[in-house]
Image 1 (cartoon, rainbow, N blue to C red):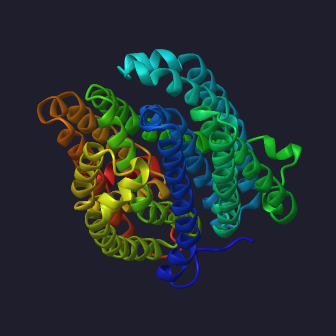
Image 2 (tube, rainbow, N blue to C red):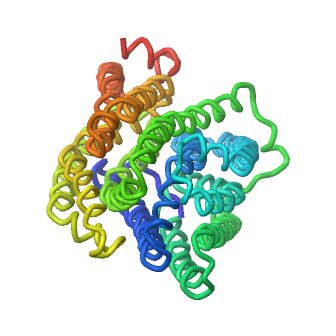
Image 3 (cartoon, rainbow, N blue to C red):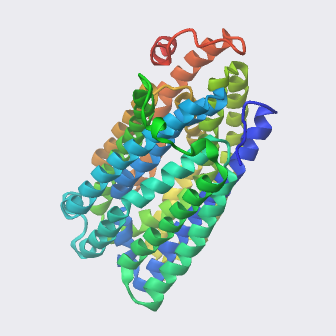
Length: 462
């Protein structure tokens, strides 16, 4: 069930590892796509807007669980690449402890702060009741989401990206069935959509636990594994919190932008929600290559395969550029009919606004592809400072778009916010990667890292 990414053609193993991630990511986005279509068609445009009004808050808090899980898996992947199974199990035990704490905090903040946050963001009054109900149920399910993300990340860290795909597919199919049943059959409205997600994710958690229990002895913990060696808990905590924080920093910019969108009215909120659903499906392949590259780099770092890391990053960059150009062209050409799936043909203003967003963003997908590749490669190398700085750049530029450009340009300011954020984040990442590349060029395979990673990331990027 495990897969060693330190041998074989870098291109082949990265693509093979990415494909299940890609299918799973697209499958998940298709679920969200279907979820939005069901809500928009069966309940109405205001209900779709209510779900959309929660998007940035969900990204802010739930997104932290996704980022943190990926960070917690990096030391696990490194230990696997080095063949150090005792260290691997101790890092897994640390990850579980950290995940429990994160889930508890996010649940408390989300459940008790939902109404105040929606009001603070100037959510249209007619949307608040449905939006608050959706948030409350979603945040009650945070421990389930955290458990799934962590277990799936740990399984992938051992090189198995296929089995989490199967579990995700089961979850997504179940999710679609439940959302149609809860909304269309039982008439539970917007809360039914959130409850469907919670139940489907719980099934995924149980499947991951069963897989680890039966087929992954590397992750079977004993009492001794809960006792960390000096420095190991920090080695797990730093990338976990850093990557979670990066996602949250990016999401704060999204919250500011959502605040501005809410001020444009329900049509603008619905248009943004529809466009984002389409956009998320389109960029899923690019994000999947980034996730795969983190595991590839971390395993090869553990094995000391430095040349292999350089080759893998360059080839992944070339692949994602070509893919980004293709996806952008498809989005520009077919955006309008896809958006109509959500809102029907009776909302021409919503469709027009959404397609404007898709045209502008699809034209610059190569920027996003480069961002995914470099950020994940640098994180796989153990660096946390520069990716966090990139997150702050995204925050700053999304906030500028929300606070300044939307007021001057209306929905056009919303459409240019993401490209501006991507460009700002790339500035420190490109500089850092060239520093890392120079450092790696000076190493032969099998050489230890000449400087601790925490210092190398700063010295080489300067």
